[in-house]
Image 1: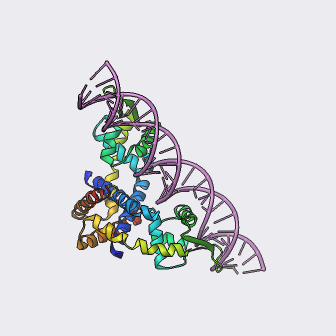
Image 2: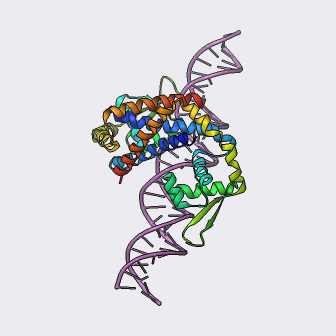
Length: 141
Length: 141
DNA sequence: GGCAACTTGATTGTGCACAACTGAGTTGAT
DNA sequence: ATCAACTCAGTTGTGCACAATCAAGTTGCC
């Protein structure tokens, strides 16, 4: 009983601690952690609809719309209605947004170092968390 | 490189998925998950200063002050300046706040069931997360 | 062809989280 | 005894997150 409270608390705490490290690492790139996640998707494939971003990041439009507007205001991203389907908005990188990738490449290694985990542990943790998330998603439906 | 991004992402996703389950379970108690965490501390010991709550929950006053005001507005909690140290604010339960404990007692079991983890896994996950959080806290300082 | 059901993104409202700062109160060093 | 350094809670500003709702656009069914 106490056990799982603590577990839930620890997940929460770990998430916020991670946020803190990213906040520090990303300060010079002028990105927040969620913005960085969105940029990572875009660095991999482009253009992407808001819907697709939401699926990839597990975020809804209420979170993504203002986030993308901030990225657009920062000159990293452009948004435009799809010609094929006027309901969709296509998000693509500007040259500045694409260029930011090079500076962002060093971040992952520094974050991983900060976790203090060895690779095997990290992989196991990742597996456990994915199963956890899948089970929780199932339960909250 | 991709590995740890995914790991960080998974921690984040698990945290939000957990939030979703709590949101559902706590709806009938009219508590959010952070409010529930604060109440759990108070159900264990009382009175508690805002500072002590912050240490226990890893939250600062910018988060706790409005949260406690909402709990006070809901009639679950009273806040008053400590006579011994006028800088401190003591938080204590009202009879209604104390009474809510009985209804909250069932929540943990339902949450644990929703995680789909067996106890051994949960304990191991908890240990890994605590080491992770400690390492990250160290790194962001 | 026309209408109902659905999809998509945006908006509004509420709440969490942290940084930076403020102001009142306390403590310690001299 | 006093004053500088510190502690504590609160406020302000920014951003994330979700629920609920809306409007515009698309699709399928008849």
